[in-house]
Image (tube, rainbow, N blue to C red; front, side, top):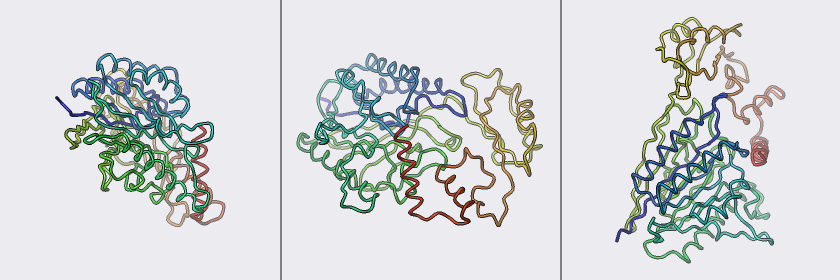
Length: 416
């Protein structure tokens, strides 16, 4: 009898994403078609998606249709396949959870939040999901934890430091859930934890991921996860990577680049094979359906930029698979009709211009020097806050003030 369990770990699909006004529906469909093929070829038993299934808390009807069509195709193509999807910080907890009672009858589990009873007691058993082979044997358990909001946690009011209080609550949730799993787990069964968070040591891109907490020191420590986990399937950071710690802890990364800051990422999903108490992990490269071009590689004067653009190959009419293009130009002052000049050169090139990034000289004595020459789109909310503070008070904001602002940003994002 084959007692191996195959799991595919992915995350951060961001269905419904737009890149500077361009819809990514075609690229997402290409990924989902490829993923469906891999589920069949690799004979995957369990598909785990660790958050940010959608790009918005209010996904369009088309985005929902794209997800449901994939689930229907997966169920039809791969009989016995189990799917576990948790919500991320971009997702609406209530919307993700809404169809869960119906879909769970088909072994499609959508977990949007930590459920509580009328007395406010966490119902952690609803986050513990048996992982089965397609033939039905239980060979593992998943701690299906979504992105954790304050409403999901039981915070200790006796701890003064807000960050420590937050970390302790997350630690307690995972470890109580781990103990619950131990009470039902049999010898040889795998224990997998899912999470959507920035874990300490994870590498982020400057412009892509929302900073759930401000700065690396506020990232979660790896020990919030039970030490006897056989694998931790993470989402939130778009770069696929392994966290250096005692546990096998991986970010699968996003399946497609969500900004030009991610254009050099090598996107993949993680294929896990659990057999006789041993785990092997293999990344499967996700093919890119639309290229992302940056011309030139670094900003140059306008005349040189236009020359490089003229040398681009003619790719025919623009289509949904045409490359995206970001143009970088160095200017000493704002240039009238800049976009018209660029668009005239690109008329027959068959590319989709996303934006023109203008870079200006920096003044050495400016207190705003770190942000000089950058577009507003290039700055995070924290950087805009620091810039405004410096302009008003001619000094950097205090650490306490930065933390307070980060908390406000987090609360606003949770309400979206």
